[in-house]
Image 1: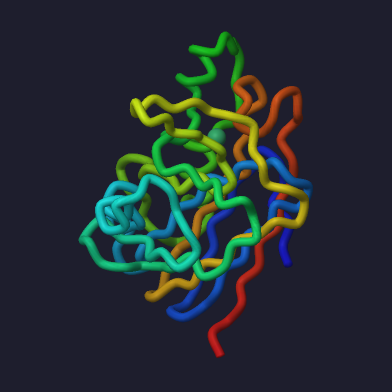
Image 2: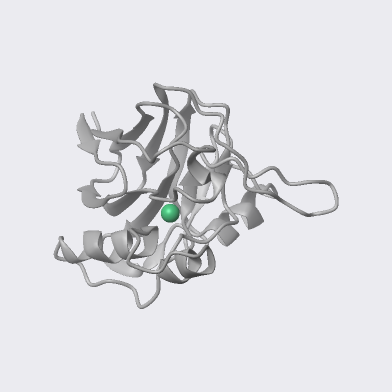
Length: 199
Ligand SMILES: [Zn+2]
């Protein structure tokens, strides 16, 4: 089990068939998650392709994550959290923090993504892909409106993904500490992740 520090990102490789477990160690923390094909970083898990396949704007245990070429790249095989995993909200970035009144630098998931990719020998896509926001609670109303609410994930809640191909996994422990993304008045927290090798 490896610690991912609050506000930071990581990129690591997983082989076809491996499981990747992401644990909300202290509860509440949102983890922006990307899964890229190790041989082609422009081919990655796509929120839009996934909801097109599932006809649901939420992820459920057993759902396949569909890539930008409409093929499954991973599956959500286990989920002990309340099941809130947002597919709508883009990663936070410095512009978002400017809009929220921050004047200096603020850690953000977009920069975490590119810094993490730069730490491994894989070319980065031109733009940050839409993330799978694990543990992010974004209730969607019947009129189509949505809000960003405090997460319901408790300490120890975890999700397990299995990758179908050799993949690059990128995680960002979201540093949002102004909007209620990670809880109201709660500082961003560490999470843990673990690769479970196939077989
Ligand atoms: Zn973020």
